[in-house]
Image (cartoon, rainbow, N blue to C red):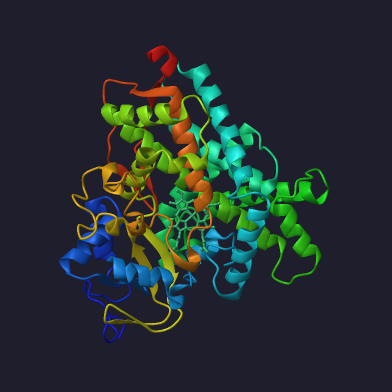
Length: 470
Ligand code: HEM
């Protein structure tokens, strides 16, 4: 029975008892360097825009094509999140928070979080000030260290995390603590990538091989993360932090005895924001600098627009409407290097038809934004890097409606305003002051490393002050 596909289920590889088609998916992932690419090749082999899989016991469909992707992002029945062991482990033991919750808990807390972050200035000019402060710290740091190669990968995530921490916990976190936090988050992502699949499909293996399965390591990192956030919560409780930040607003709801507002929920929401926001945003910036490093004429064209329209003025988000070429360039970076190539996972809340296929309730849905960003029906020469594709004959931005880097619908990324402003202000601010050059004889590789999110391969740059260049 377990190898019989449900009626009208989308095409895909053959299923075997216990493992479903995990073997094929794993071997495609290995051959093509990422699960996203491997699945995309499989979907092509089966000539389908909805790929049907069974991974262990879990039914999974992967959705391709703009019409299907819009349906998956916006229809209410796609709003759930899988109730997996992985989700619980990710949320410190219970399926709470925002990212992995669904139903009334998710609705109430997503609404609360977005509203509170806005109240403390998120998405407004206060946020820009915060980002501009971070930019001036980055410029100072580069100024003092640009006699040697600089690893942007060690600056950018710290800078994003600084801003996020300010919103969540109301204070500047010291650099040592910040580095520690980022190191754990990175190590945890790696541990999940290595053990997450196994632990999800055969969770009981943790009792037999707690070390080998990666379970003990993930648990210990969860404990460390929990302690860092707990410390921030306790500081608020004893009045050591007086800011009206996210933790402050949440603690007030706890005090007014709202039943779903608990300290556990607060901790997991903080974690959700820190995990979802730091690496994604800094990776966009690292890809943007990688592209300009590899293409000097493009870098000079961007600089010339910045220099002509801003001169020495510090950049702000409103400038993105004037700096059209820079904006088109950053859109192209987010198309060409889609940071979340497989969005989701979602869980179907009831039986649903998509592209003529019948998908049963509780099936996991993955949304292939990465393929949509390379769809030749939408983009001319999708494999060429061309910022011009986003500029119309009158010099205004176009084609932005086909871009889905932050998803769409009610589960759309709530951090998009921070991410967009951060990327724009920091990218423009650095290019305005420095020329980005290669720090070794060999140009870094343009090929990304693609896991749950895409990242550039490690590289360093030499940043030459524009004053010295002239
Ligand atoms: C360039 C940077 C970013 C990218 C590319 C990105 C991308 C995404 C995408 C595609 C989703 C939707 C997943 C789905 O449809 O199921 C998402 C959700 C989410 N993002 Fe982001 N994100 C970025 C930055 C941020 C930042 C800065 C924050 C924090 C302030 C954040 C917090 C979240 C959260 C909490 C969710 C879950 C929303 C929910 O399930 O309701 N993200 N992000």
